[in-house]
Length: 214
Image (tube, rainbow, N blue to C red; front, side, top):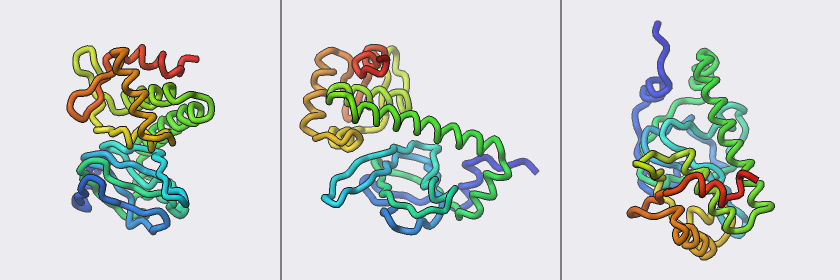
């Protein structure tokens, strides 16, 4: 029998649609299965007692969630919200675990994705601890350009419509501070906007400004 691809495995359940800004899963809720993103972007965030949000991960098409619950069967304490209109498949946890155990290549790819996210989180933690606001904004835009960006001539387009509020939530700083630092990067002609999308005009310079080379 020819093994199912990841999308074929999930597609057996049928597609579910979410509108932009819709909550897919709340912290503390028992997930109803493992989700696979067919289209759109989803953010995973934590919520403080004061109601402040901190975005930890942004998932893109082809990603699965919530993986900590799926693999370890531990409680999900995070919120998941659609950042754009989203289409997802959902499979029962036990079927998903059996599937990846029987498909080493899929498990290897999944492990690689987790390590990529871990690397991004470590970079963000470093800048949250040591970097100034300018470094933080430049670094998160560089990470987003590498993870989500698509080439457009000499530029990199970040297809995810990141608002200043979204960037602030990723970094734990205020939206007003983000706006100030974004303006600095635009004045240096490192980034630009096309509609709601950020255009990186000089990726190498953006990396230098983020201090990721230090």
